[in-house]
Image 1 (tube, rainbow, N blue to C red):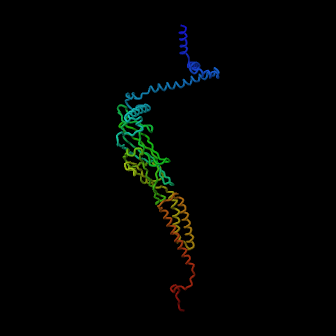
Image 2 (image 1 turned 180 degrees about the vertical axis):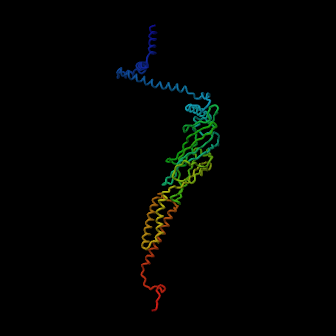
Image 3 (image 1 turned 90 degrees about the horizontal axis):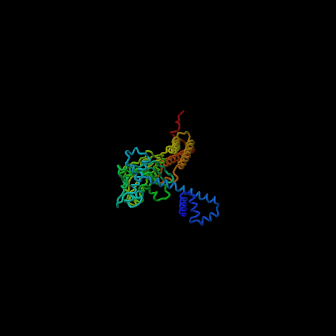
Length: 420
């Protein structure tokens, strides 16, 4: 009876003990008693109690969040069964609509994983499963928002976006069951998208080209619509014939690397929208085409070609006014009185033309103009040659006028002789 009473008293003391007392008893009398004896010999009783109290408090702080998280996850309805009570989807709160979209997306993701036999199949695998089946991508719209030139390297940079659409049979659901016809994919990478990039992005690690998908929307019939943002650069063929109104022709190529034979492009509209483009160049022509790759005829590529002309009225005026003044001096010099004055005026005109030509050289591209000779260069050359020939002719006339004549004039120039 005495032992039973002692056992009951010990049991009641254990149940009534605080977490700090339980931790202290386990530390002093448990399996680690030898280690505890060493630690207890090196610490004062008050220090040992303080350390054990801090440990018990830390355990409590760790247990409380874990319990709360367990209760929170237990209350989540992964199937969103409350959707059966929805009568009007437009009256649903914004956060509740996002929860409904997440429930639908995870349901479709689980079904896609079971169908294709791989986890996260909706994110990493293309939508088709049959052999030799292709994916038809419709290009609905092409937009160019910015365009700028690198004059040194003769490169054009553009950025804009493509609006694309394709079918994904894995993203189909009953509208009557889920009360919504669309699902907004709010983060990039949650669904599979084609790996469409520029050629320079695929061949150079230092390239600034990139593509990214934004605003992806899935409909209940499996149709996916997205906006592919891009930035590309390409080397241009430049025609300097009308410099400073020179013309540049550049072509940009987009294609898939992982699925070159799988993806097929269809252009709904070959017009490029440039209504909001910001540039100081005049775009004469911009086209988008679907072509076959020259290296692999089974591979399709998208090609954007842009023809731009420089739009700089101030530079044109700077280069035209000096040569116009020098040419004007050449034509008005014969109206000066003496030949010596004409020589000085023509010498000044040649000096002015030379200075104007040097100014033109400073305004030309650093890498030259290739095989094309600008018209303004031909005009400068023509005026300089005409001025030089006129100066030579004037000097020749001036030299001939200084020759002393020692022969009598002809009879017709003599006055008539009258007989007195």
